[in-house]
Length: 137
Image (cartoon, rainbow, N blue to C red; front, top):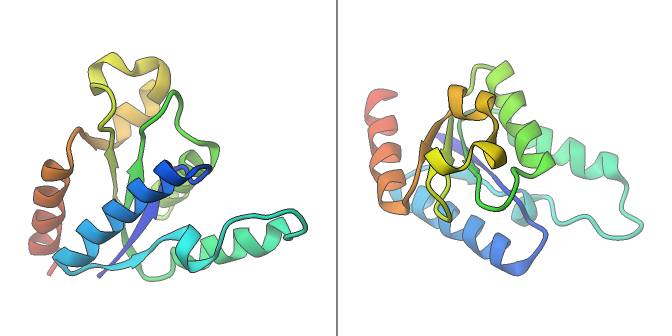
């Protein structure tokens, strides 16, 4: 079962947290797609379409998206990936560990909070991922 890990990738701490979420997911038994590992980061001279096509390919056979929602605002790429997943009827689980969800309406928006189960710890994410596997096998 494949999970797409969506989240901000602009700096090393953001990438490290995405890799932590990937490890949690793979340790539980998921095949994972991690954009910066599997496609690479955009660099000067890289065609945007190469990154976009690679990210879209990551959704193939995807059964779940885990979206990292930490930070002042949800990243544009993360928001797009979440919307794409919703449009494709792929469930999305959000994780926000830096601030309580009920204090984060300005960062998350009502539509994200209203359509996405958002967890506030990696321990809760582990439980949710295990339940997802049980319910979808």
